[in-house]
Amino acid sequence: MTDDDADKNAKKARSDQADLSVGGRSAWARAPLGPVSPRTQSVAIQTVEADYTIERFQGQERAAIVRFFGITMEGNSVLVNIHGFTSYFYVPTFDGFNQNDLTLFADSLNNALAEQSREKGLTRYVKGVVMCSKKSLWGYQFGKHHPFIQVSVTIPSLVATSRRILEQGIMMGQHGRKMFQTYESNIAYVLRFMVDKDIRGGAWIEMPKGTYNVRSTAQKVSHCQLEIDVMDWKTVVAHPPEGEWLKMAPLRVLSFDIECAGRKGFFPTAAVDPVIQIANVLTVPGAKKPIAQNVFTLNTCASIVDCQVISHQTEQELLMKWMEFFVYADPDLITGYAHTQTHTHTHTHTHTTHTPKDAADRARGGSCRVGLLCPVGGTRAVRSAHRGRRGC
Image (cartoon, rainbow, N blue to C red; front, side):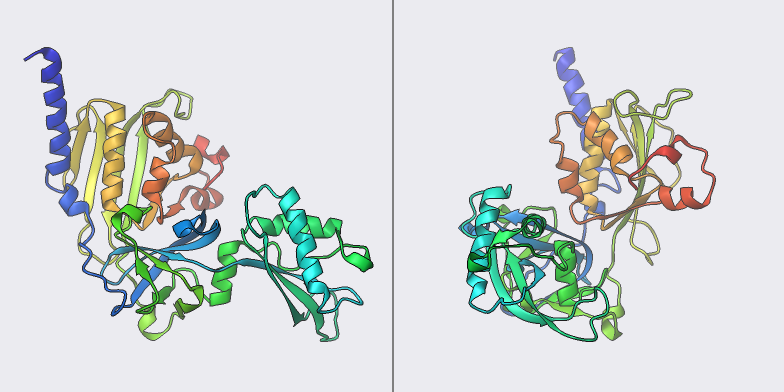
């Protein structure tokens, strides 16, 4: 056996020990997911995070999909993909505008969006227009209702473009060029969905039986144990925080801290200072003991009472093994002192050079980060170069 072979075997042995030692993968992982039958079972989750993505789902035209990440009462992680909800805003009509002008308005705006929007290749930019009666909150209106147009667009980003186009004016046939003021055109897409469905932050939502489909392993886009698609957004049930729905799911909370080899007088930077350890505590609030208490170290470290020490020869190995732990731990809430894009993310992304830049983001998908630096820094004199950093 050559020296290189011996080094490779020793490295593999250290890797195996990190994975299989007490408190390893089997202890870190969530409870296994039981069988799920869309025809006979509903799925209820306590929401942790929400966002949206633009996808061409099952060969259809690109459209926005609202995504809710959450946890079942059994402790399983779920990603709910909700289809069919479109962005919309309101436009007041002008004197002389009638129902027959709706098509002209929609076509004129659609043509302008096709020319000026960054979104290209859509069959239709304006999804629909509907006349409605609304009351403006701008100025004193004496309680009067006025005719408005509800404008729905295919992609959320088209709302801002539509606002700019309408404020500059569009051609309205015999009426000439008309400029329009927009209402509710600055509401974020996911927030709009939550308001319309009366979904509150951290509340429970339920997908009744027969209203969803389960994604296969090949179709999954996250590390959640279950991914489902709801094709009709109106079928999602939002539970108010009352009675049975005041309960808390067993959320997994990961508290961790990264330590670097600092230089005297300088705050650590990812390009220069190596990561020397990452300490972690994974808990479920109310549990008698944590799921994991460990520290990933560069080189050796003395034993620590009630803590698993996982040593690595290189910084690259340390960070990759920690990210593997992160995936298996699958935390719902991430907390710590300075978990920001400019600190924690910069170090993990910069030093794991052979990993895709968004790998940590994919691993973290659906977790809610809570940094303690900004709240503490705002009320206490924190003696740290952190005081000048932003992004908590």
